[in-house]
Length: 263
Picture 1 (tube, rainbow, N blue to C red):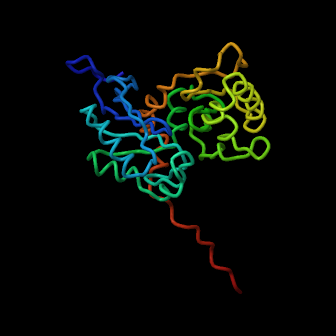
Picture 2 (picture 1 turned 45 degrees about the horizontal axis):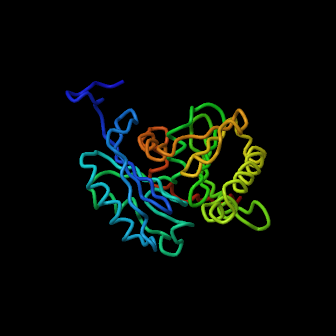
Picture 3 (picture 1 turned 180 degrees about the horizontal axis):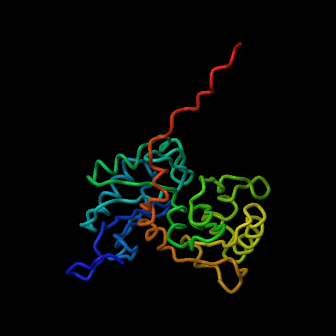
């Protein structure tokens, strides 16, 4: 533990963590140890979720939380460094190649790191041993994969077909939950768990997201756990760990094959 200041807080950078979802935008400020030191605030995600309107919403949430030194964004889609490439539940065409992290850094005047939202949640719950996976049950189904605490390259598993041509998003997402009800939805969740174990061979699977509250932990295998939805925010501190610095560095130069040898 680091030094303690005169207010009883551990000294070090305070992290403002944003969790962007299809239904709500959420935020909180975290201590250097990853503890929430403010109330968690949220607003409804704009419809349609145009980038400029989401940015406006995030800035308004930051204004409610006052002091912080850096920012972490959990985004529901494929992201690379400061850029969004897909946003299945916000509108792909609106978001493709939008430099969200750079825009927020300019708006708030603080350094920003952005990861897929399931990756941020995973950083908040994993133990760092073996193969660990995280799925988030919300508007869609998020996915993240870790090996000995190291974040693997992102797979947008939510867009992969699981049954009858339906993607995971379409099979266990929010819309189908509302359509078929909790009982049938839970049956589907329990069907995908062994599929994921076969595909990924995880040691531990964590299920988070807002709809994970509908799952009874007693009905799950021993190596499957439900976790608090707050991890989507509290994992924001670990996004600044040195072990994932490489994800935010400038991309390497394109590979250039050696010149063909001629005699």
